[in-house]
Image 1 (cartoon, rainbow, N blue to C red):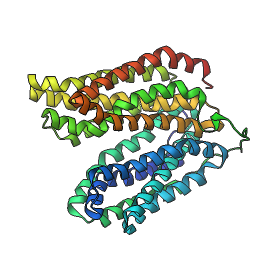
Image 2 (spheres, rainbow, N blue to C red; image 1 turned 90 degrees about the horizontal axis):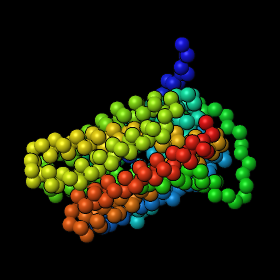
Image 3 (cartoon, one colour; image 1 turned 90 degrees about the vertical axis):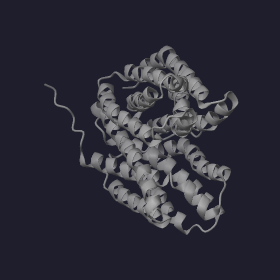
Length: 400
């Protein structure tokens, strides 16, 4: 019987804790910020949208450069520096007396998050045994999902019971504890890498481009769901709490990540992604059909609505560790940062497109069901592209 490589090393446990505390600090504040901006600075809806999107844009801008920096310089100092800046900004929010200063802090926060998320994802790959990388990435992502489940709920509860200063302080404390955990992580020595002065692969994993296109197409409808599903439920008359939708989604993500990671470690990367894609196709078409189904039976549709959330969580939870491993397997060990940033950038660009276009499509065609129908079609295109182009390309070019 073959002995498995050890997964739960002290460093892996520390980086799991650091990742959870980072995302908990982020998600705790996320649903509260619109209220804070409205009450503190009398910001309108469009201004709130602009301020919140500054974070996402900054995060996207830094990611290709962060991959290059992590592959060129020592990874842990960059991880700790970006984690420190990310944490300090929570204190800065409390001191920002002018809206212009708050916007500036939000942009810096986005830069820090873009760097720290790529750095953490790259370091966890460095410290995981290669034979259990998929499983380890599943657990690493699980820390995000747990934070996503409890962070917003805790933030909204505190919003009703505490002052904004207390909420900002809690995010600051969470970040400080995470920084302590991050400092305890021991990373393997990385040989300095000499690079050509100008080359695209310094900032983007060229071999990962086909997979990036497929992932981007998938993330557009995912972005539409996370942003507009509460409005969609209200629009068609579903009484079920949208918070419950996200809880079911988080459960699906959490459970499937562990299963997926183990299958990835058995070499079934493309099969796992294909399975997740098939499930995603079903979930988006079912979500689009909810409007018509409400006319038939509102009670059954409300239950189905939560079932769709669970299915969507399972679909994407299945794909996340597999896609991450796919990108890393296409690059050399010295390209892990670039591979990770390419993976996360492809995902985030699609999320941004979904966020921007979901509302426009719903307005133009008369309902969010049309947005999810288009999302389902995009998922079918992504699946066909993956099966026909991406999977064969990966099997020809993978390095491990």
